[in-house]
Length: 183
Image 1: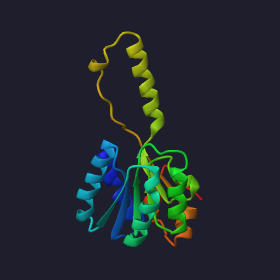
Image 2: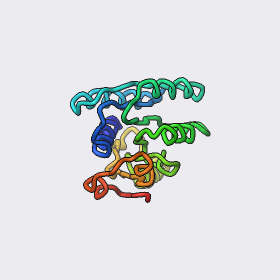
Image 3: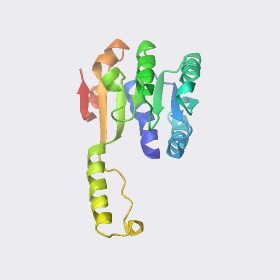
């Protein structure tokens, strides 16, 4: 998950070549999100990008987080959030659409509402593998002996309608790598 977070920086930079400052909206209460943020923190300077950390631990902190993003004037936003409650995701998407902030979300977490990009593991094969593990455990396998599997398939989705609304022309090289393009 940590390497995926750093890859989101690269993809956002490809989509928005003028990118020099990004904000990262992340859930500080989830350990894997902290690791993902640290990877972004390490990758950003190598790409010449300044970083703004916007930590959120609960739904009641979004108003303050959005104000911090506005004050920071980022060229882009990365949303590392993991589990979200009820209207959290629509609130985030609405904020970035209203403020025309190029944003990359986790897969299934933003372009349907008007966000620019999504990147992450393709969850369908992971769910199928989980079913295999459940079957093995149900048939007596010791969970401690089963190997940990990491995702092998990743998905990139791009919303061209959102790009147009933000005045961004997505490079053809990036569009060709996209698994899904919304027009």
